[in-house]
Length: 292
Image (cartoon, rainbow, N blue to C red):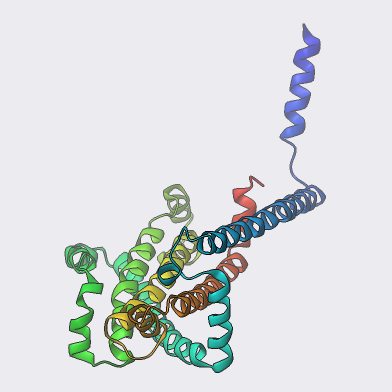
């Protein structure tokens, strides 16, 4: 009767032993190896899936299943993409769109984070302004694009205002929500030990909010590209959005898709940069999510 009990107790004590530096290094190495193994399987599957989709698209157009005038085909799109890049036309439009997107995103990101911090630090101000902020956030900003054009003109200023109007509230509400994620037990314990308010904010509140803030920034970056392009399509003469709108009006669908692909590539690169920055700042989070 005592044998199994003794073995169980011994096993339990072994699992409860403190983790040494060598053990931690082994766990981290194993986690990295598993991650690389997953990537080695996922990436080829993604390439195969993309190749199959492109081949099916090309075959459907060549077989007459889909009308080339409306959907073009990958070979034509690739040719239009190369022509647009080599001539510099697509790159010139990209520069305009990037300027509007990044300027609006930076303004919205800085203002949104600062506003979220202020609302968290001043609860009375948050209680007073929250209904107004919610009401403004519910306004259809894309539908207000003609009004922004009336106020700020046909140039880039109206598109930047549109980007800020969409992205500001995303960053603001994500920042405020993230600041409320700090563990109440940790805050109470720190207060009991004599920690000051700024210490609590720097050591507990802000680190716990970083992940949520970055999630808001990622979403805001996506909406920044969206709003800049839509603004150009509605009331612009330059930029990728204006080029795409003109391509649709003249049934140049291959050039439309070429501009769209360039936009997707650039937006994906910027999203990757954001994820890289987040992973550097929150490298401990990936290990925590893996249960290390």
